[in-house]
Structure formats: C-alpha cells, structure tokens
Length: 234
Image (tube, helix red, strand yellow):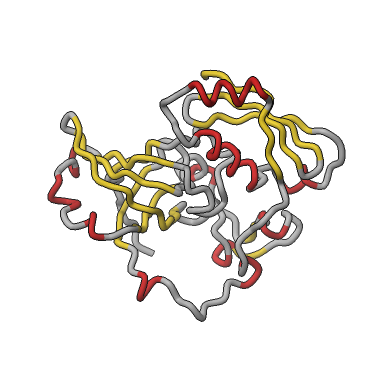
C-alpha cells in the first residue's frame, strides 16, 4: 500500500461552528451559506476560470475533527436510528480509513476581495474550518443517475418536526440585518431534527443549544415540536 501526501487547497468558512446540528447530507438546508477560502498557493483567479459556468460543484474534503480518531470497519448509520451496523464503505460515516468526504453544493459566485479568492456556496453540510482537498464541476448528465437506488438511504430524510420562535427571539432575528435568511435557516436546521438517535426515543421536554454563525441558540423539544427560546451573540 502506497502513501500519498495531500495538501488542502482551501478551507470552508461555514455557519456551522460545531458538528452538532450540521445536516447529514448537503442541500437539505439551502439557506446554509458558506465561503471556500483558497490558500495562498491557489489564490489566483486562473484556478477557477470557467467554474462560474456550473451551478453546482463537488467538494472533496477531510473530516479534520475525527481524522485522528482512526476508522471503524462497522458503523451505525443515523438513518437506521443507530441500532444497526453497516460496513463503513456502505455509508458516508466520518470514521473512514482516509477521512475523506464529498459534498455536491450550489455555487453562487466567485469573490475576489482584498486580494483573497473565494467561492460563494449554498446548501453546505460542512463544519467551519473544514479543509478542502479538491473541487470538481457537477455534471448533471453524468452525475445524476435517474435509475439509481440507495439501499437503506433511498429516500430523502423527512421529519414531522415543527418549529416555533418566542416573540423575543423573532424580534431579535428581525432586527439583525447581517443574515437575511437567519430565521428560515434556523427553522430548517431544526426541522432536520439534529438530535442523536437515542434522544429521539425519550419522552418529555428536552433542551439543546447550538452555534450558527456567531449566535448561540437554545431551543426546547417536546415530541415533534421545537421552540427556540433564546438567541444571543457568542
């Protein structure tokens, strides 16, 4: 087995500051906006010339927060409630031999500002600071296989979760202007039900917190209903 050296070409500047609450697949939360910031070696417009002709791109990245924890031959996919084991190569789990992941995301534009080249992205599912190791255009005629099946993950994950905001939280969100889609962003993150599988089986009210952008957000879950109770600058 040969060893290969791979260096990051950039990193993701993401609203997701912790693994908790990140959607388990890309494009499930369209309001999740991010930037791909290129390293100095690739900080030239020549590297992305023509990429704006594509609406979507593939990102190959490294699971940098779990890479040093090693890998497992068998994992418990969240789609199966964490109750059944599958081979790691039959899943998109993070604990992989080379800790490499991939996401197909929407490309919203190219930015070259103050000498820094960036790609503007939407629908991401990546942690802030994630190293990007390659970019490839998404080709609908080749990459979208209409007759494909996906085993235990064959359908888009859906929940019956509803989301409510207290008047104080709603007022705070409406007054801030930095993130116009913040209310919908928070709502769609919570509709994905980011709780661990074992928590979903418990009765009674549960309280959680997460950080999105530079906001600490707290909410309560009772059955299939979320109530966002507080939001404040982190």
